[in-house]
Image 1 (cartoon, rainbow over the protein chains, first blue to last red):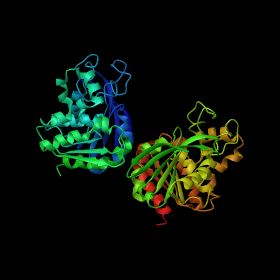
Image 2 (image 1 turned 180 degrees about the vertical axis):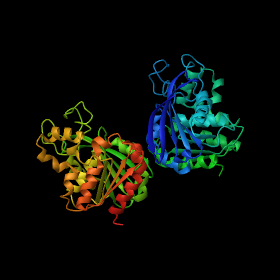
Image 3 (image 1 turned 135 degrees about the vertical axis):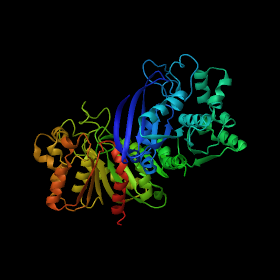
Image 4 (image 1 turned 45 degrees about the horizontal axis):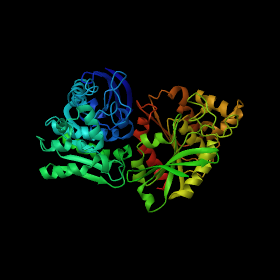
Length: 277
Length: 277
């Protein structure tokens, strides 16, 4: 494992590391922000999952999260969005292959050999983080767009592993929208019976714990009506009595300008749960 | 003039426009952030000048300035760093030609035809901004690295036009460091007598007003000892009694992680001067 970047930011350390991921059978980068409080005692960790086309850089350069992480004394880990490299299958489309891992374990060729992002994010990466850095095992998870889907799915399927869940502009029902139908057909095959394990709306009925979920969604998001459809998730949550707060933010789009405008609220939401306050 | 981007950010509007700049004899982009307060009354304007290799995007995507601009009710304009395009002279080096305009009026071939950034930033762009957007004629200026040089030079040479000056990691004495010697030789010619008009340290003795200048400088900046040398500027300011506050920030580097960590302080410095508080 090799550190490839180190910058002081908001009094803490923004680092980027490169390591061989067993689950992905390739080398990938991840970013970790360690707040100043980590110099004296271990801190809890928020995992931020990015969206289509992103890598570990987008969140750390554009979200403005470091000042809030320093304020609350939490670390933030921003992983890759897929396996990467010459030996890894890819697709010319932006919404399939490298940069578009959808945080699932692929079962179909040619993807299954490397595209095991669910296992990587859920188990391998936290184990590495907790063995390497001054952090506790208190974890929470959030994400944007495809990464919002990842945060909801991984959070809902792993009771006890995360203290809080939130999302910006998430794909909440991938089995019902074009991005998800295309990706799941490619990664999981045409048999839709396997898809529900990666569909946040379908998972709600099986959630063994009911962590409150915060979702921010911009009203001017180009993908709102075709790909995101948060109302599907909210309706199912209401039917089940699962606590979900959907905030429609007037005029905001799908960009990091939206994320940076509300990241402080999300980090406060996570920090409160991580510290048990 | 054409708007090429519009994003809601921190309750205001992050816009990018493209226009034909007369001074530069080419088309360039500029970015403007309009805080929510601009919806009801004109607001003052901070000009942010970026560094080598940058365009109008770097500051608006990475500095996290919008939240502070919204808090203080100020607009921020982030222009290009040089003329651009196929018809514009260029150089393969990162520190000469397109992306490296040094905020001066070039006199030498092949640069003089388009590289008139001093006139563009000082006069043409503010006139356009003030005729087009809901802003007042209260202006201030700041920048980073080459843009810190630009902010100091333009601020010092134009008494009465700006209410405040600040800089991150500025080139303060371009006539004494390699970046400046190379650029000034190319743009202004080998006769060094013309260079002092664009050297902040040399200009201090001729400043007709003594606006307080705030400078932040990272102690781990790779360029500190060879290109930046803020102590040269501070010594001359002390000799003249010109108020300069240099804050050496321990461990910070030359990146936008540094800018984003202290941009709130700079915007507060400018807002206080712009509002006369």
